[in-house]
Length: 198
Image (cartoon, one colour):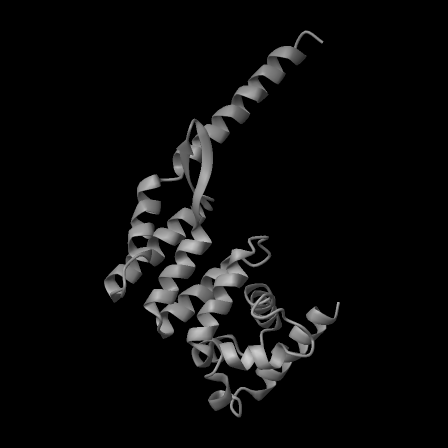
């Protein structure tokens, strides 16, 4: 019994220093750099390469949130996913689609809802690249479905009767690529219907 207290104290100290170390490992400068890149009207290849490198470093350090303090309270300024999603949207080319899909695969199983929300917005801009890149990967198609339903639930109120109309309205490029990607698009529409039917 005499040894229990010192061991518990040592364990508590270890936990505190581990948490402190994890917070120190999240470099605010890296998040500020990503934020600056995410606000550019157009993103050069060099800047995009820097962003991808920073994202991987922050992932490695398990830094998912860019936090600040206001009135002595911690708050989330932005998430790593939202920043990278915005950067990929502004880059708006095949390299951005590939980088975002790679990010999704590295974070497979994550509970971060922003992953699917950003993915669907990228899909709107580059459906051809997205569908060519993911093939018939049901996990990624399911992410697209979830992103679509949640991004457009009030656009207007999404139902089993109007979902196809809304889908083609927000994705006008789909009609021209439908013959090539019929299997993927039909699957996507089917699972959107099933989600709305619940």
